Image (cartoon, rainbow, N blue to C red; front, side, top):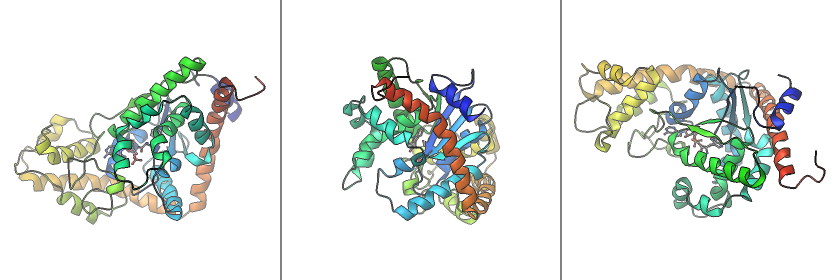
Length: 351
Ligand code: AMP
Ligand code: TRP
């Protein structure tokens, strides 16, 4: 489709008949870890053929907590390289940096004005992030409205994310519905798509907390996507388990460590639960389990790490890909934003 056709199609609701639009985002802060891959990126790659896809590197979201400017710049490129290295195809997906498309910040303001502040104060991620900050930025509270804008500008039907983002996607739905009620049918009400297994990969050092980028520097917490095989093996071998020896899926919190390792194994091998348990029927304790899990993680991540290294050697090529992505995103988000502004009474001449 040409850009003009795209613009025409997207000024209203729904684009190419029958094709579902997917939007998701990931922050360029901290090291991308296995939970990001299993909970989000892998699903994006696996399903990129079927849909119209937008994947956004959300640098404006990263700014909601303090960032070093040079480090943020580096992480933004590194994350772009990671998404391409993981298998997202720039022919099939629009991959871009959030701040390169100004419609996102503008949409956030417009949506702020229809979002009751109580909705934001209730968000569990805000509450837990705010606990650890000396000063809390207004951006941190407003974070889910920026995210709602991201999604709604593209009329996304599906938002594939990990479990921790469920509440934010729900909020985006609430905001869309409220806007539609006030101004008339404008936004598609999006749905969160959360993997059944792998939606919440837990910390290796503490299986009661989710594996997270912000803790990825803590030894033994995470497998980082760019860790070399030795490091991956070391982290997995050190993973906290329990005193038993049964290698079964379980929702017993006491057995969360083993369950987590099995979940990782399941997603990366594509086997079902019964087949995974059968794989370990003759295992000699958790040592065997850990070796096998380390093996499949290393097999999955090694080609990604190598490709990432290659891509990072040609920053200009990477930046060009992101420029093309931003142009394509702008062609969709720009007209949508104009339509919203007009509805809200901001455009003096009506079309
Ligand atoms: P973030 O690291 O917050 O930018 O998250 C990017 C994507 O990865 C989001 O869809 C998250 O829900 C997902 N994600 C982050 N950590 C995990 C985890 N431990 N398990 C599963 N998904 C995760
Ligand atoms: N808040 C999400 C996270 O930290 C990232 C994000 C920003 C996002 N905008 C989005 C995810 C839009 C899905 C859709 O994981």
